[in-house]
Image 1 (tube, rainbow, N blue to C red):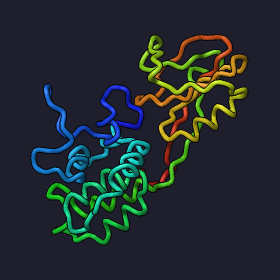
Image 2 (cartoon, rainbow, N blue to C red; image 1 turned 90 degrees about the vertical axis):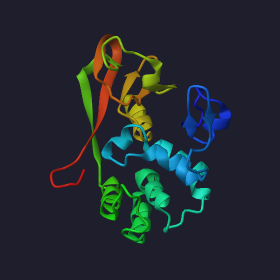
Image 3 (cartoon, helix red, strand yellow; image 1 turned 60 degrees about the vertical axis):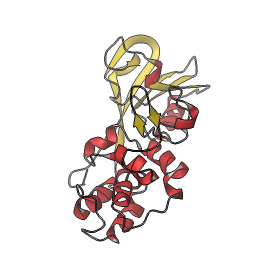
Length: 224
């Protein structure tokens, strides 16, 4: 849960995870221990590329700043290897790489994690990414949509008013980690910064609007 999440009690939102979450019980703990590295670490498994579908850089930074950085994360603790890989590597990969490099290759690694994978994972997070603006269905006189032309959920974007130019709207997007594109209306000075997990997949004809996708890519020879 990110700061400001309206769907859970504030006492749990400030922790960013619930811990135990049953039908009739929510408890900030686990059945095997109450250390915060355990409560948060178990949410990071499995440590695979799919993890970033649910754990964004923005969320991981909040979780680290509010909770995890205040914990005593010993390099001899196997749960530390999970926290460094599943959190720190996503928002501060250089530091995570160095921390994991200094950990013992077997004694300090979680049973389902190798030091080689943890270091590789941290290294590729820091790979230079590039992005390009791509018009959606021509771009002009198009309003952005989610999974289909009918999907215009307000959860898909962050609305910013008073944005006179498309370039300024692009700047708002580029300053937002999760941005996948923009919708802009010059007359209304209306800018939608799209953050939908699946990206902009459709558009709707709407005079005066423009829809652009913000697409990340790697150059040949770069590690993704």
